Length: 266
Ligand code: ADP
Ligand code: MG
Image (cartoon, rainbow, N blue to C red; front, side, top):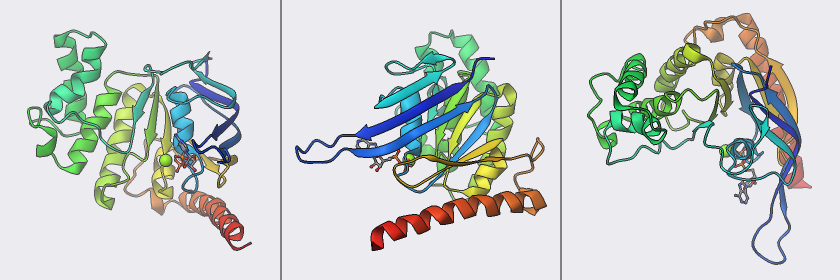
């Protein structure tokens, strides 16, 4: 079975423009893989290279050493076959919600009738029916986020990258969107790499969670989230196994915070 994505012993250094400036090592010897249909959470201190991992897979940047694969093939240049949902919703302000959702299909040359049909199913699933002709400024933050997620999932990429997609939303909206995301994901089960700083969210969504060390980012530990699906995101925190996983993740994060503070004081 072809892996959905793989990073093999990846290093990434950013070289600042100033002549005397030292290169900054963002990722150090990162190896990770996702199988088709697997939902993987990525957690770690700010600046540990989580977004860098996603940018490498999207082909926006190249590794300094090591290999990056998407569906078994090395990533070369911009990888527009991978779905990428960033923290900003990036909706086009001059297009209606429906036209935004259909945008990617339009670029891929999908005919109008099929576009409409595929968009309709997902728009309905996230409760946006009736808002098709609204422009982004006429939608709430949660609605815009739904539209941007649906816009990426509608083209059925086998791999989807999500970078703190629910970051700016309030706590209630986040949980509702987590529930909707799991339902959308369940339709076609793409492999997902999901970056979040929210431990509860990572457990609720993921099959596996990888924690990162502080910079340079290395994989610290793998946590298998062996909770049955479908999951009830509203009550998942009541499970004993949830509490164990939460403690284990929090231990990883606490160690990294302590290590960072040591670095500052010495
Ligand atoms: P995270 O998403 O985990 O917060 P990032 O992947 O955004 O971390 O960044 C990791 C490190 O690499 C940070 O120190 C960041 O400043 C640096 N970095 C990221 N992208 C660039 C870039 N394009 N140029 C220079 N430095 C960068
Ligand atoms: Mg980031």
